[in-house]
Image (cartoon, rainbow, N blue to C red; front, side, top):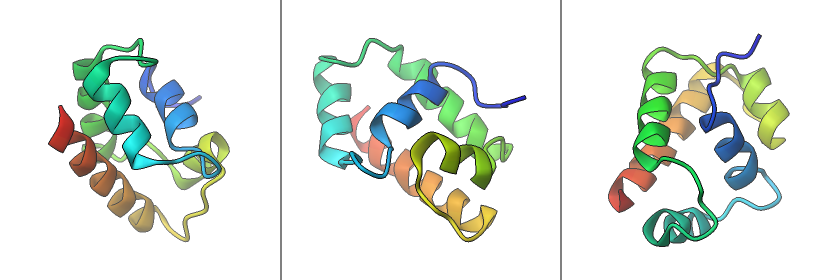
Length: 90
């Protein structure tokens, strides 16, 4: 059973997919709210918890995004970077 809660799971799938990931798109969605019908604070809290408690495995993340990571540590570094990016906006 996935430990990734909604809406975080859907946001990762929609905005972090390897074929469509663009930091500018998610920044714009977060700033304007257009095309982002999710509670931004809930998303940010869920992402922080997922990082702090290592709730997302490489397998789960790869299944959602098709992004390939060599280790859980690499994924954790990426999630920290992603969190940092969105924190600049929200």
